[in-house]
Amino acid sequence: MTAAPAPEPPKQRWRGLIFALIGFIVVSIVPVLGFYAPVKAWHVMLTTIIAACAVVGWIRGAPAMTAVVWLAAALWLLFRPGVDGDAYYWLERGWILLVAGIFGLAAVLGPDRPFFGRALLTVLAGFVIALAVLGARAGSFERLQTIVSGEFVTRNQATLEAFDAGADEIVGAASNSEGVAQNLERTKERLRIAPQISGVLAPALLALQTLAALALGWAVFQRLSRVRIGPPLAPLRTFRFNDQLVWGLAVGLTILLLPAFAEAQAVGLNLVVFFAMLYFVRGLGVLAWVTKGGVFVVLAVLFSLFPPALGALGLSDTWLDWRSRAKAA
Image 1 (cartoon, one colour):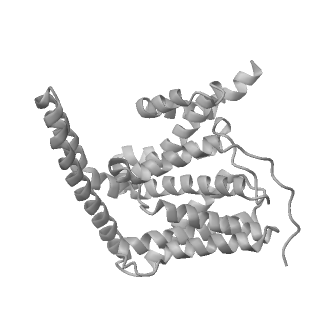
Image 2: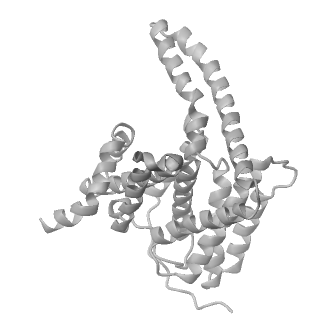
Image 3: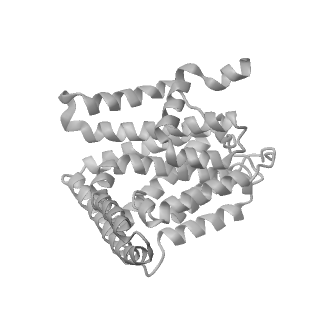
């Protein structure tokens, strides 16, 4: 038996969401940027998350056909016939199914819970379940490390081949060919060590990519559906989270900097990267609030040139609460 339909949600704009979708796709598929995105099948992740939301919508009174269509699309993408995927291919799909299932269950059990808390809980529960499954079988962690490392090495080789193919044309067309060649060689050296960086930071990068996919999938469904399944995604300018999460950054820095925790430095580095990115987005929120959310060019420039400054701005908002101070003033 389905519940009575909830009131229709107010219309939400697509403009900001379209910009966010474009950014997510670019980061996922552009060779150099996409190298650091653990899940290559971004479209499969988004479709499966929307399908999970559609099932929740059906439980709340939305038409069953909507859920059927999205589920069919997700299952076809997940288990497309004729595709002989490698171990990493199925590892991706296992994570996508796990996350979508947990997120849908969280939406059913906590319909009034704010999105970010639900999404963060989903990612945390996903890691806990994955670690429990891996720990139940001897050698699973080593096997996982081999699969992930092999995937990033394969990506790196393809990126370097594409880079070499384009570098020759750039150098040939440049007036200062010697200087351009030196810059390209330095870039290539950085690309060579990328697999090591990605391998170490894979958990943090996966958590961040999953949070972004959950936010986008949730926002897309909220705009497509007439049935509310939870609070709409708040605008970037109001983005904030529990101030107690600062302890996650503190723990990461402690593990990373103290010699006593040398063996767990990878854990500390992942915690620092994950929470630093959360505070970076919070800093973007503060800046978007100050600029009334309309200066996309400024945000893009700051995104590319001043990430530490925005991270510091977001971190300082924990104690100074810039937006409340500005309202009071």
